[in-house]
Image (tube, rainbow, N blue to C red; front, side):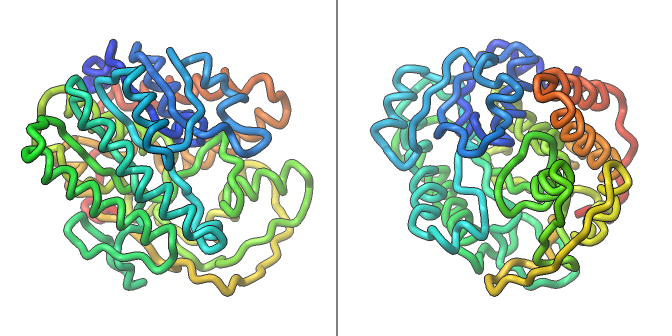
Length: 366
C-alpha cells in the first residue's frame, strides 16, 4: 500500500473529532493499517451518524467524549493516552450554524485548537500534530483564482474567520516551540468541500440530497450557481495521513500550511452536482430558497505544493466520488447494517488505487 501507511503502523494516534464525519473515516483508515487509534470528541449529534453506523468506536483503542473547549478535559485525555501523533479534526464545521452561534464557533475552532496544541506541547513523546482548518480561511475575492498557502487569510462569516484565527494560532505555536524547548512539528491542512457517505450534517448539499431522495421529498438549495472544490473525504484523509507520516520521518518542511484540493475540472456548481448525483440515484424536485446570510459563491484551491512536495493527488475524480458517495447512501438506506462493510470496502478500494501509479495530473488544478 502507500508508503506513508507503513510509517503510521503501530503509532499511537489521538484523533479529535473521531465521532464526526471526517474523523470517522480517518479513524477507520488508521485502524485498517495497524495504527493504535484513540478518540476525543463530543458524542455524535445526528441520528443516524457514521460513528454508530460504521462502528468507529470499535476500531479505537479508547474513545473519550469530551469538549475541546474544556482545556482541563483535553489535557486529561492527553495525559491518559500519551499519543505519538495528533490529528485534530474536532470543530464547529458549519457556516450557517456559525451565524447562529458565533461565540460557540470561535470557542471551538480557535480556543479548541489552542487547547489541543497546548496539551500536545506538554507531552514530550508527541512528535507532531496535523490541524485541519478549511479552504475558507482565505480572504476570498470571489474571482476565478485558486488560492495558495501564502495568500492573505480572512473570513466573512464566523466559521471562516474562526478557522483563519486558528491558522494564526497554529503559526504562533509553531514559532513558539523553540522558546518552550519543545521539538514538535505542526502542520495545518486546508481542504476543499468534502463529500462522502455517512455525513448527515445540516445545511450540506450531499446530506440534504440523500435525505430528500430517501424520503422522496423536494430538495431545498440556496445557491445553485455556487462553485466549490468538491472531493471525496478519503482524498482529504489521504493528505492528512501523508502529513502525519512525514512528521514521523522528522521532515521539518512539513511543519507548514498545506492545501488539498481537486483538479480544476472537478470544481463545479451546485446545480451541476445535483445533475450528476441524479444520474446515480434519482431526480429530485428542487426548490431554490436564497439565504440572507453571506456564503461564498466561488472558491478554489491551488494544491501544487502538496502535489510536488508530498506526491499527493486525489485518487478519485469527481465522477468516481459521486458514484461512491451515492452508492454508500443507497446501500445504507437499503440496509443500515451494511454501512460498516461499505465504508471499509471503499477505504480498501481507495487504498488500492493509491498503491498503483496514479495518472499525471494536469497543471490546471484547484
